[in-house]
Length: 115
Image (tube, rainbow, N blue to C red; front, side):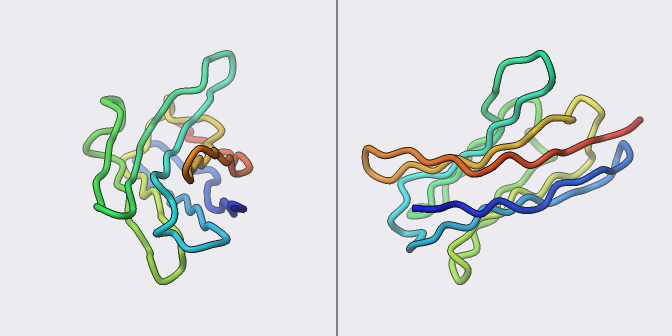
C-alpha cells in the first residue's frame, strides 16, 4: 500500500483547509485510516480516525466539532476537512492506514495557522 497525502498550507485563524489521503489499492482493504499531527517540540498525537467499511469516525477532543473525515470511495481516499482552525492546530499532519497487520504512513504535510 502506498499513501499519497495532499492538502495543507497556511491559513489565518478561523480558516479552513482540507487534507487528503489516497491509497494505492482498494480502500475497502484498509481496516482503518488515521490522521496524526506533531507540533514542534510536542509528541505526535492522534487527531481523527476513519473506518472505511462502516464509515465510523473518531475525533480527538481538541478537534471535535471542527474537523470532519469524509470518505471518497471513488478515489480510494479520505479527506480531513478542518474548519475553524486555531493557531494550536499548527503542526505536521500524517496519514496512517492499517491493512491487516501492516501499518503504513504517508508523508507529512504542514498546516500553519496564524493568529
